Image (cartoon, rainbow over all chains, first blue to last red; front, top):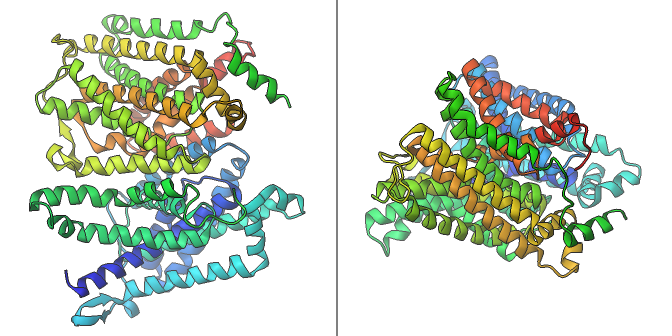
Length: 308
Length: 331
Protein backbone atom coordinates (compact mmCIF):
# COMPACT_ATOMS: atom_id res chain seq x y z
CA UNK A 1 0.00 0.00 0.00
CA UNK A 2 1.68 3.19 -1.21
CA UNK A 3 0.84 6.76 -0.26
CA UNK A 4 -0.20 7.44 -3.84
CA UNK A 5 -2.68 4.61 -3.87
CA UNK A 6 -4.02 5.68 -0.51
CA UNK A 7 -4.42 9.23 -1.80
CA UNK A 8 -6.30 8.05 -4.89
CA UNK A 9 -8.63 5.96 -2.78
CA UNK A 10 -9.24 8.83 -0.37
CA UNK A 11 -10.15 11.04 -3.33
CA UNK A 12 -12.45 8.31 -4.66
CA UNK A 13 -14.05 8.07 -1.24
CA UNK A 14 -14.54 11.83 -1.07
CA UNK A 15 -16.07 11.90 -4.51
CA UNK A 16 -18.45 9.06 -3.62
CA UNK A 17 -19.29 10.80 -0.38
CA UNK A 18 -20.10 14.04 -2.22
CA UNK A 19 -22.46 12.19 -4.56
CA UNK A 20 -24.16 10.59 -1.58
CA UNK A 21 -24.46 13.98 0.07
CA UNK A 22 -26.25 15.46 -2.94
CA UNK A 23 -28.82 12.66 -2.84
CA UNK A 24 -29.07 12.54 0.93
CA UNK A 25 -29.47 16.33 1.30
CA UNK A 26 -32.73 16.33 -0.65
CA UNK A 27 -33.95 13.25 1.14
CA UNK A 28 -33.20 14.58 4.60
CA UNK A 29 -34.83 17.93 3.80
CA UNK A 30 -38.02 16.27 2.61
CA UNK A 31 -37.97 14.09 5.69
CA UNK A 32 -37.11 16.79 8.13
CA UNK A 33 -39.56 19.39 6.91
CA UNK A 34 -42.45 17.30 5.66
CA UNK A 35 -42.00 14.10 7.68
CA UNK A 36 -42.40 12.40 4.33
CA UNK A 37 -40.53 9.22 3.44
CA UNK A 38 -39.83 9.34 -0.27
CA UNK A 39 -38.46 6.07 -1.60
CA UNK A 40 -38.77 7.45 -5.12
CA UNK A 41 -35.90 9.84 -4.39
CA UNK A 42 -33.43 7.28 -5.76
CA UNK A 43 -35.44 7.01 -8.94
CA UNK A 44 -35.13 10.76 -9.38
CA UNK A 45 -31.35 10.38 -9.18
CA UNK A 46 -31.56 7.68 -11.87
CA UNK A 47 -33.78 9.89 -13.98
CA UNK A 48 -31.26 12.73 -13.73
CA UNK A 49 -28.63 10.41 -15.18
CA UNK A 50 -30.88 9.19 -18.01
CA UNK A 51 -31.98 12.71 -18.89
CA UNK A 52 -28.33 13.73 -18.99
CA UNK A 53 -27.65 10.88 -21.43
CA UNK A 54 -30.41 12.07 -23.72
CA UNK A 55 -29.80 15.79 -23.56
CA UNK A 56 -26.01 15.62 -23.77
CA UNK A 57 -26.18 13.50 -26.92
CA UNK A 58 -28.96 15.72 -28.28
CA UNK A 59 -27.21 19.03 -27.77
CA UNK A 60 -23.65 17.79 -28.05
CA UNK A 61 -22.70 19.96 -25.10
CA UNK A 62 -22.28 18.65 -21.57
CA UNK A 63 -23.12 21.91 -19.83
CA UNK A 64 -26.20 22.59 -21.92
CA UNK A 65 -27.28 18.96 -21.56
CA UNK A 66 -26.84 19.18 -17.80
CA UNK A 67 -28.96 22.32 -17.55
CA UNK A 68 -31.73 20.82 -19.70
CA UNK A 69 -31.62 17.56 -17.74
CA UNK A 70 -31.97 19.47 -14.48
CA UNK A 71 -34.92 21.44 -15.82
CA UNK A 72 -36.61 18.26 -17.05
CA UNK A 73 -35.94 16.49 -13.75
CA UNK A 74 -37.49 19.43 -11.93
CA UNK A 75 -40.60 19.40 -14.09
CA UNK A 76 -40.98 15.68 -13.62
CA UNK A 77 -40.51 15.96 -9.87
CA UNK A 78 -43.13 18.69 -9.63
CA UNK A 79 -45.54 16.58 -11.68
CA UNK A 80 -45.02 13.70 -9.26
CA UNK A 81 -45.57 16.04 -6.34
CA UNK A 82 -48.80 17.28 -7.85
CA UNK A 83 -50.14 13.87 -8.85
CA UNK A 84 -49.07 11.65 -5.97
CA UNK A 85 -46.99 13.04 -3.11
CA UNK A 86 -49.31 15.92 -2.29
CA UNK A 87 -52.01 13.44 -1.34
CA UNK A 88 -49.67 11.52 0.95
CA UNK A 89 -48.34 14.23 3.28
CA UNK A 90 -51.13 13.66 5.77
CA UNK A 91 -50.96 9.89 5.58
CA UNK A 92 -48.89 7.66 7.83
CA UNK A 93 -45.42 6.44 6.88
CA UNK A 94 -46.68 3.07 5.78
CA UNK A 95 -48.83 4.59 3.02
CA UNK A 96 -45.95 6.80 1.92
CA UNK A 97 -43.56 3.87 1.77
CA UNK A 98 -45.99 1.82 -0.28
CA UNK A 99 -47.00 4.49 -2.77
CA UNK A 100 -43.43 5.55 -3.45
CA UNK A 101 -42.47 1.87 -3.71
CA UNK A 102 -45.09 1.54 -6.44
CA UNK A 103 -43.51 4.52 -8.20
CA UNK A 104 -40.12 2.82 -8.10
CA UNK A 105 -41.54 -0.27 -9.80
CA UNK A 106 -43.16 1.91 -12.43
CA UNK A 107 -40.20 4.16 -13.12
CA UNK A 108 -37.49 1.47 -13.09
CA UNK A 109 -39.49 -0.47 -15.64
CA UNK A 110 -40.49 2.64 -17.56
CA UNK A 111 -36.84 3.63 -17.95
CA UNK A 112 -36.18 0.11 -19.26
CA UNK A 113 -38.91 0.53 -21.89
CA UNK A 114 -37.77 3.99 -23.00
CA UNK A 115 -33.97 3.68 -22.89
CA UNK A 116 -33.52 -0.12 -22.92
CA UNK A 117 -32.05 -2.39 -20.25
CA UNK A 118 -28.43 -2.09 -21.43
CA UNK A 119 -26.17 0.28 -19.49
CA UNK A 120 -25.60 3.65 -21.18
CA UNK A 121 -22.91 6.24 -20.66
CA UNK A 122 -22.23 9.91 -21.07
CA UNK A 123 -18.86 11.02 -22.50
CA UNK A 124 -16.72 13.04 -20.12
CA UNK A 125 -16.89 16.68 -21.28
CA UNK A 126 -13.94 17.78 -23.41
CA UNK A 127 -12.70 20.54 -21.12
CA UNK A 128 -12.59 18.19 -18.11
CA UNK A 129 -11.23 15.11 -19.84
CA UNK A 130 -7.60 15.46 -18.77
CA UNK A 131 -5.78 14.18 -15.73
CA UNK A 132 -4.18 15.94 -12.81
CA UNK A 133 -0.79 14.71 -11.62
CA UNK A 134 -0.68 13.84 -7.94
CA UNK A 135 2.50 12.91 -6.08
CA UNK A 136 4.68 10.06 -7.44
CA UNK A 137 3.42 10.84 -10.94
CA UNK A 138 0.05 9.23 -10.23
CA UNK A 139 -2.68 10.72 -12.42
CA UNK A 140 -6.22 11.45 -11.25
CA UNK A 141 -9.02 12.38 -13.69
CA UNK A 142 -9.89 16.07 -13.77
CA UNK A 143 -13.58 15.27 -14.05
CA UNK A 144 -13.58 13.62 -10.65
CA UNK A 145 -11.96 16.69 -9.17
CA UNK A 146 -14.62 18.76 -10.86
CA UNK A 147 -17.28 16.54 -9.35
CA UNK A 148 -15.85 16.98 -5.87
CA UNK A 149 -15.64 20.73 -6.47
CA UNK A 150 -19.19 20.98 -7.81
CA UNK A 151 -20.49 18.95 -4.89
CA UNK A 152 -18.73 21.15 -2.37
CA UNK A 153 -20.04 24.24 -4.14
CA UNK A 154 -23.59 22.93 -3.97
CA UNK A 155 -23.07 22.05 -0.33
CA UNK A 156 -21.90 25.60 0.34
CA UNK A 157 -24.84 27.05 -1.54
CA UNK A 158 -27.18 24.82 0.42
CA UNK A 159 -25.63 25.97 3.67
CA UNK A 160 -26.05 29.58 2.60
CA UNK A 161 -29.70 29.12 1.61
CA UNK A 162 -30.63 27.15 4.70
CA UNK A 163 -28.65 29.16 7.21
CA UNK A 164 -28.73 32.69 5.82
CA UNK A 165 -31.95 33.28 3.88
CA UNK A 166 -35.56 33.76 4.89
CA UNK A 167 -36.67 30.65 3.00
CA UNK A 168 -33.97 28.71 4.80
CA UNK A 169 -35.17 30.05 8.11
CA UNK A 170 -38.68 28.83 7.34
CA UNK A 171 -37.23 25.48 6.34
CA UNK A 172 -35.43 25.12 9.62
CA UNK A 173 -38.52 26.21 11.50
CA UNK A 174 -40.55 23.71 9.50
CA UNK A 175 -38.13 20.95 10.35
CA UNK A 176 -38.47 21.70 14.05
CA UNK A 177 -42.22 22.19 14.17
CA UNK A 178 -44.22 22.27 10.94
CA UNK A 179 -47.69 22.78 12.51
CA UNK A 180 -46.40 25.80 14.42
CA UNK A 181 -44.95 27.37 11.26
CA UNK A 182 -48.25 26.81 9.53
CA UNK A 183 -50.13 28.36 12.44
CA UNK A 184 -47.92 31.43 12.20
CA UNK A 185 -49.30 32.12 8.76
CA UNK A 186 -46.71 30.58 6.46
CA UNK A 187 -48.11 28.83 3.42
CA UNK A 188 -46.84 25.38 4.32
CA UNK A 189 -47.97 23.84 1.03
CA UNK A 190 -45.82 26.29 -0.89
CA UNK A 191 -42.92 25.63 1.45
CA UNK A 192 -43.34 21.90 0.93
CA UNK A 193 -43.28 22.36 -2.80
CA UNK A 194 -40.11 24.44 -2.66
CA UNK A 195 -38.42 21.86 -0.47
CA UNK A 196 -39.52 19.09 -2.74
CA UNK A 197 -38.41 20.84 -5.91
CA UNK A 198 -35.07 21.56 -4.30
CA UNK A 199 -34.58 17.94 -3.26
CA UNK A 200 -35.52 16.68 -6.71
CA UNK A 201 -33.05 19.05 -8.34
CA UNK A 202 -30.26 17.92 -6.04
CA UNK A 203 -30.93 14.25 -6.75
CA UNK A 204 -31.17 14.93 -10.48
CA UNK A 205 -27.95 16.93 -10.34
CA UNK A 206 -26.17 14.08 -8.56
CA UNK A 207 -27.41 11.61 -11.17
CA UNK A 208 -26.40 13.81 -14.09
CA UNK A 209 -22.95 14.49 -12.61
CA UNK A 210 -22.44 10.79 -11.93
CA UNK A 211 -23.46 9.80 -15.46
CA UNK A 212 -19.99 10.21 -17.05
CA UNK A 213 -18.25 8.04 -14.43
CA UNK A 214 -20.89 5.40 -13.67
CA UNK A 215 -22.87 3.21 -16.02
CA UNK A 216 -26.39 4.53 -16.39
CA UNK A 217 -28.78 1.62 -15.93
CA UNK A 218 -32.21 0.82 -14.52
CA UNK A 219 -32.11 0.29 -10.78
CA UNK A 220 -29.01 2.46 -10.31
CA UNK A 221 -31.06 4.68 -8.02
CA UNK A 222 -31.99 1.88 -5.63
CA UNK A 223 -28.46 1.30 -4.38
CA UNK A 224 -27.89 5.01 -3.92
CA UNK A 225 -31.22 5.43 -2.16
CA UNK A 226 -30.36 2.87 0.48
CA UNK A 227 -26.92 4.35 1.00
CA UNK A 228 -28.54 7.78 1.30
CA UNK A 229 -30.81 6.32 3.98
CA UNK A 230 -27.79 5.08 5.86
CA UNK A 231 -26.25 8.53 5.53
CA UNK A 232 -29.20 10.44 6.92
CA UNK A 233 -29.73 7.96 9.71
CA UNK A 234 -26.10 8.27 10.74
CA UNK A 235 -26.15 12.05 10.33
CA UNK A 236 -29.44 12.59 12.11
CA UNK A 237 -32.74 12.98 10.29
CA UNK A 238 -33.46 16.46 8.99
CA UNK A 239 -29.94 17.73 9.54
CA UNK A 240 -28.05 18.89 6.46
CA UNK A 241 -24.80 19.31 8.34
CA UNK A 242 -25.24 15.79 9.65
CA UNK A 243 -25.90 14.51 6.14
CA UNK A 244 -22.72 16.17 4.91
CA UNK A 245 -20.50 14.73 7.62
CA UNK A 246 -22.12 11.31 7.43
CA UNK A 247 -21.94 11.20 3.62
CA UNK A 248 -18.20 11.83 3.69
CA UNK A 249 -17.73 9.23 6.43
CA UNK A 250 -19.80 6.64 4.56
CA UNK A 251 -18.07 7.40 1.26
CA UNK A 252 -14.60 7.09 2.78
CA UNK A 253 -15.35 4.04 4.91
CA UNK A 254 -16.97 2.19 2.02
CA UNK A 255 -14.26 3.00 -0.53
CA UNK A 256 -11.30 2.45 1.77
CA UNK A 257 -12.90 -0.69 3.20
CA UNK A 258 -13.34 -2.18 -0.23
CA UNK A 259 -9.78 -1.43 -1.30
CA UNK A 260 -7.82 -2.17 1.84
CA UNK A 261 -9.87 -4.70 3.80
CA UNK A 262 -8.09 -7.59 2.07
CA UNK A 263 -4.65 -6.30 2.90
CA UNK A 264 -5.69 -5.59 6.44
CA UNK A 265 -7.07 -9.07 7.00
CA UNK A 266 -4.04 -10.65 5.35
CA UNK A 267 -2.01 -9.52 8.32
CA UNK A 268 -3.63 -12.18 10.48
CA UNK A 269 -5.34 -14.55 8.02
CA UNK A 270 -4.44 -16.80 5.11
CA UNK A 271 -4.90 -15.25 1.67
CA UNK A 272 -8.05 -17.14 0.49
CA UNK A 273 -9.93 -16.74 3.76
CA UNK A 274 -8.89 -13.09 3.89
CA UNK A 275 -10.34 -12.60 0.43
CA UNK A 276 -13.64 -14.28 1.35
CA UNK A 277 -13.98 -12.49 4.68
CA UNK A 278 -12.83 -9.22 3.17
CA UNK A 279 -15.48 -9.30 0.46
CA UNK A 280 -18.23 -9.98 2.97
CA UNK A 281 -16.97 -7.57 5.58
CA UNK A 282 -16.28 -4.64 3.27
CA UNK A 283 -19.78 -4.67 1.77
CA UNK A 284 -21.29 -4.84 5.27
CA UNK A 285 -18.96 -2.25 6.75
CA UNK A 286 -21.18 0.83 6.46
CA UNK A 287 -24.18 -1.05 7.86
CA UNK A 288 -22.07 -2.10 10.82
CA UNK A 289 -20.97 1.50 11.16
CA UNK A 290 -24.60 2.58 11.16
CA UNK A 291 -25.51 -0.01 13.76
CA UNK A 292 -22.70 1.18 16.04
CA UNK A 293 -23.62 4.85 15.62
CA UNK A 294 -27.26 4.15 16.35
CA UNK A 295 -26.44 2.02 19.31
CA UNK A 296 -24.44 4.85 20.82
CA UNK A 297 -26.54 7.77 19.54
CA UNK A 298 -30.04 6.78 18.36
CA UNK A 299 -30.64 10.36 17.16
CA UNK A 300 -27.64 10.31 14.82
CA UNK A 301 -24.35 12.20 14.94
CA UNK A 302 -25.63 15.74 14.44
CA UNK A 303 -29.40 15.73 15.02
CA UNK A 304 -31.18 18.82 13.72
CA UNK A 305 -31.89 21.31 16.45
CA UNK A 306 -35.31 21.44 18.01
CA UNK A 307 -36.27 17.86 17.20
CA UNK A 308 -36.72 15.44 20.00
CA UNK B 1 -59.72 11.97 25.48
CA UNK B 2 -61.47 9.10 23.86
CA UNK B 3 -58.27 7.07 23.53
CA UNK B 4 -57.88 6.66 27.27
CA UNK B 5 -60.66 4.16 28.05
CA UNK B 6 -60.00 2.36 24.79
CA UNK B 7 -56.41 1.78 25.78
CA UNK B 8 -57.23 0.52 29.23
CA UNK B 9 -59.77 -1.87 27.78
CA UNK B 10 -57.32 -3.12 25.19
CA UNK B 11 -54.96 -4.34 27.85
CA UNK B 12 -57.38 -5.41 30.52
CA UNK B 13 -60.01 -7.41 28.69
CA UNK B 14 -59.88 -9.86 25.84
CA UNK B 15 -61.59 -8.56 22.73
CA UNK B 16 -65.31 -9.34 22.92
CA UNK B 17 -66.20 -12.40 20.89
CA UNK B 18 -68.03 -11.50 17.76
CA UNK B 19 -69.93 -13.92 15.65
CA UNK B 20 -68.50 -14.16 12.16
CA UNK B 21 -64.97 -13.38 13.30
CA UNK B 22 -63.92 -16.88 12.47
CA UNK B 23 -66.05 -17.23 9.37
CA UNK B 24 -63.62 -15.70 6.89
CA UNK B 25 -60.46 -17.51 8.05
CA UNK B 26 -62.25 -20.87 8.29
CA UNK B 27 -63.71 -20.37 4.83
CA UNK B 28 -60.28 -19.38 3.53
CA UNK B 29 -58.55 -22.48 4.87
CA UNK B 30 -61.35 -24.77 3.64
CA UNK B 31 -61.02 -23.31 0.15
CA UNK B 32 -57.25 -23.75 0.24
CA UNK B 33 -57.58 -27.35 1.41
CA UNK B 34 -59.87 -28.12 -1.52
CA UNK B 35 -57.51 -26.59 -4.12
CA UNK B 36 -55.79 -29.90 -5.08
CA UNK B 37 -59.25 -31.33 -5.72
CA UNK B 38 -59.95 -28.50 -8.17
CA UNK B 39 -56.75 -29.35 -9.99
CA UNK B 40 -57.74 -33.00 -10.29
CA UNK B 41 -61.07 -31.77 -11.67
CA UNK B 42 -59.34 -29.97 -14.50
CA UNK B 43 -57.74 -26.74 -13.27
CA UNK B 44 -54.25 -26.36 -14.80
CA UNK B 45 -51.60 -28.01 -12.63
CA UNK B 46 -49.52 -24.84 -12.58
CA UNK B 47 -52.17 -23.37 -10.32
CA UNK B 48 -51.20 -25.64 -7.48
CA UNK B 49 -47.57 -24.55 -7.65
CA UNK B 50 -48.67 -20.91 -7.76
CA UNK B 51 -50.96 -21.43 -4.79
CA UNK B 52 -48.20 -23.20 -2.87
CA UNK B 53 -45.89 -20.28 -3.53
CA UNK B 54 -48.64 -17.90 -2.46
CA UNK B 55 -49.12 -19.76 0.80
CA UNK B 56 -45.38 -19.65 1.49
CA UNK B 57 -45.43 -15.88 1.09
CA UNK B 58 -48.60 -15.84 3.16
CA UNK B 59 -46.60 -17.28 6.07
CA UNK B 60 -44.06 -14.47 5.67
CA UNK B 61 -46.77 -11.81 5.31
CA UNK B 62 -48.54 -13.21 8.37
CA UNK B 63 -45.35 -12.89 10.40
CA UNK B 64 -44.94 -9.32 9.18
CA UNK B 65 -48.53 -8.54 10.14
CA UNK B 66 -47.73 -9.46 13.74
CA UNK B 67 -45.23 -6.61 14.07
CA UNK B 68 -46.59 -4.27 11.40
CA UNK B 69 -50.31 -4.63 11.85
CA UNK B 70 -50.57 -5.50 15.51
CA UNK B 71 -47.41 -3.84 16.81
CA UNK B 72 -47.35 -0.87 14.43
CA UNK B 73 -43.68 -1.43 13.57
CA UNK B 74 -43.05 -0.93 9.84
CA UNK B 75 -40.17 -3.28 9.16
CA UNK B 76 -38.67 -2.77 5.71
CA UNK B 77 -36.18 -5.59 6.09
CA UNK B 78 -38.42 -8.54 6.65
CA UNK B 79 -37.22 -10.36 3.55
CA UNK B 80 -33.93 -10.84 5.40
CA UNK B 81 -35.59 -13.48 7.59
CA UNK B 82 -37.09 -15.15 4.55
CA UNK B 83 -33.61 -15.20 3.04
CA UNK B 84 -31.90 -16.44 6.19
CA UNK B 85 -34.42 -19.28 6.43
CA UNK B 86 -33.88 -20.17 2.78
CA UNK B 87 -30.09 -19.98 3.05
CA UNK B 88 -29.87 -22.08 6.23
CA UNK B 89 -32.05 -24.68 4.50
CA UNK B 90 -30.04 -24.50 1.28
CA UNK B 91 -26.67 -24.71 2.99
CA UNK B 92 -27.70 -27.62 5.23
CA UNK B 93 -29.16 -29.56 2.30
CA UNK B 94 -25.99 -28.93 0.30
CA UNK B 95 -23.95 -30.18 3.24
CA UNK B 96 -26.00 -33.39 3.25
CA UNK B 97 -28.46 -32.66 6.04
CA UNK B 98 -31.94 -32.63 4.50
CA UNK B 99 -33.94 -33.63 7.59
CA UNK B 100 -36.45 -30.91 8.45
CA UNK B 101 -36.41 -31.86 12.12
CA UNK B 102 -32.73 -30.91 12.20
CA UNK B 103 -32.93 -27.95 9.83
CA UNK B 104 -35.87 -26.21 11.47
CA UNK B 105 -34.45 -25.90 15.01
CA UNK B 106 -31.14 -24.58 13.63
CA UNK B 107 -33.00 -22.19 11.37
CA UNK B 108 -35.29 -20.96 14.13
CA UNK B 109 -32.31 -20.45 16.40
CA UNK B 110 -30.40 -18.41 13.83
CA UNK B 111 -33.44 -16.31 12.92
CA UNK B 112 -34.17 -15.69 16.60
CA UNK B 113 -30.58 -14.67 17.24
CA UNK B 114 -30.48 -12.33 14.26
CA UNK B 115 -33.84 -10.84 15.21
CA UNK B 116 -32.78 -10.37 18.82
CA UNK B 117 -29.52 -8.60 17.93
CA UNK B 118 -30.85 -6.39 15.13
CA UNK B 119 -34.17 -5.85 16.91
CA UNK B 120 -32.37 -4.59 20.01
CA UNK B 121 -30.69 -1.94 17.87
CA UNK B 122 -33.65 -1.12 15.60
CA UNK B 123 -36.10 -0.75 18.46
CA UNK B 124 -34.01 2.01 19.98
CA UNK B 125 -35.45 4.16 17.20
CA UNK B 126 -38.97 5.02 16.11
CA UNK B 127 -40.93 5.95 13.04
CA UNK B 128 -39.03 6.72 9.88
CA UNK B 129 -35.69 5.80 11.40
CA UNK B 130 -36.99 2.35 12.27
CA UNK B 131 -38.09 1.84 8.67
CA UNK B 132 -34.68 2.79 7.36
CA UNK B 133 -32.68 0.80 9.87
CA UNK B 134 -34.57 -2.40 9.22
CA UNK B 135 -34.00 -1.71 5.54
CA UNK B 136 -30.28 -1.28 6.11
CA UNK B 137 -30.01 -4.51 8.09
CA UNK B 138 -31.87 -6.28 5.32
CA UNK B 139 -29.31 -4.98 2.84
CA UNK B 140 -26.52 -6.11 5.11
CA UNK B 141 -27.75 -9.70 5.00
CA UNK B 142 -28.27 -9.37 1.25
CA UNK B 143 -24.63 -8.40 0.72
CA UNK B 144 -23.49 -11.10 3.11
CA UNK B 145 -25.29 -13.69 0.98
CA UNK B 146 -23.73 -12.19 -2.15
CA UNK B 147 -20.31 -12.64 -0.60
CA UNK B 148 -20.92 -16.30 0.31
CA UNK B 149 -18.88 -17.53 -2.63
CA UNK B 150 -18.70 -21.08 -1.24
CA UNK B 151 -22.49 -21.25 -1.61
CA UNK B 152 -23.00 -19.68 -5.01
CA UNK B 153 -22.44 -16.03 -4.11
CA UNK B 154 -24.30 -13.73 -6.43
CA UNK B 155 -25.47 -16.58 -8.68
CA UNK B 156 -27.32 -18.41 -5.97
CA UNK B 157 -27.30 -22.00 -4.89
CA UNK B 158 -29.13 -24.79 -6.68
CA UNK B 159 -30.47 -27.58 -4.46
CA UNK B 160 -30.46 -31.13 -5.73
CA UNK B 161 -32.49 -32.60 -2.93
CA UNK B 162 -35.63 -31.71 -1.00
CA UNK B 163 -36.05 -31.86 2.75
CA UNK B 164 -37.56 -34.86 4.44
CA UNK B 165 -39.72 -34.78 7.55
CA UNK B 166 -38.74 -37.45 10.08
CA UNK B 167 -37.32 -39.45 7.17
CA UNK B 168 -40.57 -39.23 5.21
CA UNK B 169 -40.27 -37.90 1.69
CA UNK B 170 -43.36 -35.68 1.86
CA UNK B 171 -42.08 -32.84 -0.32
CA UNK B 172 -41.47 -34.78 -3.52
CA UNK B 173 -45.04 -34.78 -4.76
CA UNK B 174 -46.77 -31.53 -5.57
CA UNK B 175 -49.86 -32.33 -3.53
CA UNK B 176 -47.82 -33.57 -0.58
CA UNK B 177 -45.80 -30.36 -0.50
CA UNK B 178 -48.98 -28.32 -0.89
CA UNK B 179 -50.53 -29.87 2.21
CA UNK B 180 -47.33 -29.52 4.21
CA UNK B 181 -47.22 -25.79 3.42
CA UNK B 182 -50.94 -25.49 4.18
CA UNK B 183 -50.44 -27.21 7.52
CA UNK B 184 -47.55 -24.89 8.35
CA UNK B 185 -49.60 -21.86 7.36
CA UNK B 186 -52.55 -23.00 9.46
CA UNK B 187 -50.24 -23.75 12.39
CA UNK B 188 -48.57 -20.34 12.20
CA UNK B 189 -51.93 -18.64 11.82
CA UNK B 190 -53.38 -20.30 14.91
CA UNK B 191 -50.22 -19.59 16.86
CA UNK B 192 -50.16 -15.90 15.96
CA UNK B 193 -53.88 -15.66 16.55
CA UNK B 194 -53.52 -17.09 20.06
CA UNK B 195 -50.58 -14.80 20.67
CA UNK B 196 -52.50 -11.71 19.58
CA UNK B 197 -55.49 -12.64 21.73
CA UNK B 198 -53.29 -13.19 24.78
CA UNK B 199 -52.35 -10.58 27.33
CA UNK B 200 -49.04 -10.16 25.52
CA UNK B 201 -50.83 -9.45 22.25
CA UNK B 202 -53.10 -6.93 23.89
CA UNK B 203 -50.16 -5.04 25.36
CA UNK B 204 -48.46 -5.13 21.97
CA UNK B 205 -51.54 -3.65 20.31
CA UNK B 206 -51.91 -1.06 23.04
CA UNK B 207 -48.27 -0.06 22.58
CA UNK B 208 -49.06 0.71 18.96
CA UNK B 209 -51.88 2.99 20.01
CA UNK B 210 -49.99 4.80 22.73
CA UNK B 211 -46.53 3.59 23.74
CA UNK B 212 -46.07 6.27 26.39
CA UNK B 213 -49.23 5.31 28.26
CA UNK B 214 -48.34 1.63 28.10
CA UNK B 215 -44.90 2.21 29.52
CA UNK B 216 -46.30 4.48 32.22
CA UNK B 217 -48.73 1.70 33.11
CA UNK B 218 -45.65 -0.33 33.97
CA UNK B 219 -44.90 -2.44 30.92
CA UNK B 220 -41.55 -2.52 29.22
CA UNK B 221 -42.64 -1.55 25.68
CA UNK B 222 -39.27 -2.20 24.07
CA UNK B 223 -39.04 -5.69 25.53
CA UNK B 224 -42.55 -6.60 24.38
CA UNK B 225 -41.81 -5.30 20.91
CA UNK B 226 -38.53 -7.19 20.83
CA UNK B 227 -40.27 -10.46 21.72
CA UNK B 228 -42.80 -9.85 18.93
CA UNK B 229 -39.97 -9.01 16.54
CA UNK B 230 -38.14 -12.24 17.37
CA UNK B 231 -41.26 -14.38 16.98
CA UNK B 232 -42.06 -12.66 13.73
CA UNK B 233 -38.54 -13.26 12.41
CA UNK B 234 -38.72 -16.94 13.32
CA UNK B 235 -42.01 -17.44 11.48
CA UNK B 236 -40.63 -15.67 8.41
CA UNK B 237 -37.67 -18.07 8.63
CA UNK B 238 -40.10 -20.99 8.35
CA UNK B 239 -41.44 -19.42 5.16
CA UNK B 240 -37.84 -19.33 3.92
CA UNK B 241 -37.49 -23.05 4.62
CA UNK B 242 -40.48 -23.82 2.41
CA UNK B 243 -39.42 -21.33 -0.24
CA UNK B 244 -36.04 -23.06 -0.63
CA UNK B 245 -37.80 -26.40 -0.96
CA UNK B 246 -40.30 -24.98 -3.39
CA UNK B 247 -37.87 -23.40 -5.84
CA UNK B 248 -34.96 -25.87 -5.26
CA UNK B 249 -32.86 -22.75 -5.45
CA UNK B 250 -31.64 -20.08 -3.07
CA UNK B 251 -30.30 -16.69 -4.11
CA UNK B 252 -29.56 -13.28 -2.60
CA UNK B 253 -32.54 -11.94 -4.57
CA UNK B 254 -34.79 -13.64 -1.97
CA UNK B 255 -33.86 -10.90 0.46
CA UNK B 256 -33.55 -7.88 -1.79
CA UNK B 257 -35.22 -4.78 -0.42
CA UNK B 258 -37.84 -4.96 -3.17
CA UNK B 259 -38.90 -8.27 -1.69
CA UNK B 260 -39.35 -6.58 1.70
CA UNK B 261 -41.48 -3.94 0.00
CA UNK B 262 -43.58 -6.63 -1.62
CA UNK B 263 -44.15 -8.27 1.74
CA UNK B 264 -45.38 -4.98 3.16
CA UNK B 265 -47.68 -4.53 0.20
CA UNK B 266 -49.12 -8.04 0.59
CA UNK B 267 -49.89 -7.30 4.22
CA UNK B 268 -51.48 -3.94 3.48
CA UNK B 269 -53.31 -5.27 0.43
CA UNK B 270 -55.13 -7.80 2.56
CA UNK B 271 -55.73 -5.41 5.43
CA UNK B 272 -53.27 -4.82 8.28
CA UNK B 273 -53.74 -6.28 11.71
CA UNK B 274 -56.36 -8.88 10.86
CA UNK B 275 -53.85 -11.75 10.25
CA UNK B 276 -56.02 -13.58 7.72
CA UNK B 277 -55.86 -10.34 5.73
CA UNK B 278 -52.14 -10.93 5.26
CA UNK B 279 -52.86 -14.41 3.90
CA UNK B 280 -55.50 -13.12 1.49
CA UNK B 281 -53.19 -10.26 0.49
CA UNK B 282 -50.29 -12.59 -0.29
CA UNK B 283 -52.47 -14.87 -2.39
CA UNK B 284 -54.05 -11.93 -4.24
CA UNK B 285 -50.63 -10.39 -4.83
CA UNK B 286 -49.07 -13.52 -6.30
CA UNK B 287 -52.07 -14.28 -8.49
CA UNK B 288 -52.09 -10.68 -9.77
CA UNK B 289 -48.35 -10.80 -10.39
CA UNK B 290 -48.70 -14.09 -12.26
CA UNK B 291 -51.59 -12.85 -14.38
CA UNK B 292 -49.90 -9.56 -15.25
CA UNK B 293 -46.57 -11.18 -16.08
CA UNK B 294 -48.37 -13.44 -18.56
CA UNK B 295 -49.81 -10.30 -20.12
CA UNK B 296 -46.57 -8.41 -20.70
CA UNK B 297 -42.94 -8.61 -19.65
CA UNK B 298 -43.26 -5.01 -18.49
CA UNK B 299 -45.90 -5.93 -15.93
CA UNK B 300 -44.30 -3.68 -13.33
CA UNK B 301 -45.41 -0.66 -15.35
CA UNK B 302 -48.98 -1.71 -14.63
CA UNK B 303 -48.37 -3.01 -11.15
CA UNK B 304 -46.58 0.08 -9.84
CA UNK B 305 -49.44 2.49 -10.57
CA UNK B 306 -51.90 -0.08 -9.21
CA UNK B 307 -50.05 0.04 -5.89
CA UNK B 308 -50.12 3.85 -5.91
CA UNK B 309 -53.83 3.94 -6.70
CA UNK B 310 -54.52 1.30 -4.08
CA UNK B 311 -52.76 3.36 -1.41
CA UNK B 312 -54.45 6.60 -2.46
CA UNK B 313 -57.99 5.34 -2.75
CA UNK B 314 -58.61 2.36 -0.50
CA UNK B 315 -58.69 1.92 3.22
CA UNK B 316 -58.43 -1.29 5.18
CA UNK B 317 -57.39 -3.55 2.32
CA UNK B 318 -59.36 -6.49 0.99
CA UNK B 319 -60.59 -7.57 4.42
CA UNK B 320 -61.80 -4.05 5.08
CA UNK B 321 -63.71 -4.00 1.80
CA UNK B 322 -65.28 -7.39 2.49
CA UNK B 323 -66.34 -6.17 5.89
CA UNK B 324 -67.87 -3.02 4.50
CA UNK B 325 -69.80 -4.80 1.77
CA UNK B 326 -70.90 -7.30 4.42
CA UNK B 327 -72.52 -4.39 6.24
CA UNK B 328 -70.70 -4.91 9.56
CA UNK B 329 -68.95 -1.93 11.07
CA UNK B 330 -66.80 -3.72 13.62
CA UNK B 331 -63.12 -2.82 13.48
